[in-house]
Each structure stands twice: as structure tokens, then as C-alpha cells.
Image 1: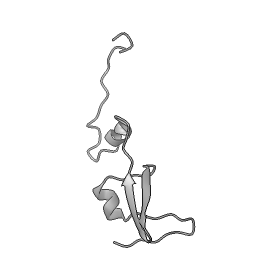
Image 2 (image 1 turned 135 degrees about the horizontal axis):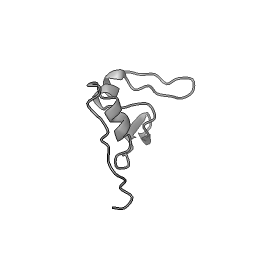
Image 3 (image 1 turned 90 degrees about the vertical axis):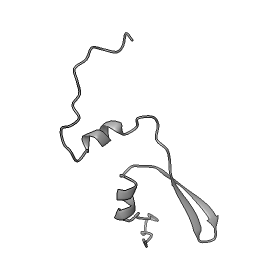
Image 4 (image 1 turned 60 degrees about the vertical axis):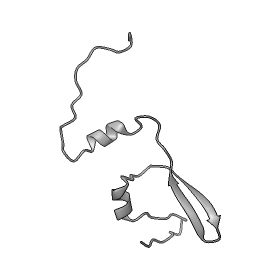
Length: 76
């Protein structure tokens, strides 16, 4: 796949890759220069459960995630 660098120095990841790896706006990456003209792009890991609620709410099968009423967990 090919992409271009914008005038701001931004590289766009092709939609096919974003869909395969569930890459969304705001995700963080690291880039490493391996050699002249060669670079390695790595997605940075998430903290536990980071983005879980957003992922559940964006599920294509709407309304399958429903919060259940519960008592406070402050005393547990």
C-alpha cells in the first residue's frame, strides 16, 4: 500500500489497515528510524480497559450493552 506525507508532516494510514487493526483517531504510535529511508511504526499499548466503554458503545450491534443498576462499590 502507498501513502503520502502531508505538508504538515503527517502520514495517513490506509483505511484497510485501520479497519484490520481497529485503529481510531487519537491512538498513539511510536516511530523509530531504522536506516536511511526505513522506519518502524508501532502502536503504543493501552492502559488496562482504556477505551473499553467507547468500544462497547460503538459496537455495530446497537443496544446490546446495557449498564445494570448496582449499589456503590466504594465499600468493597
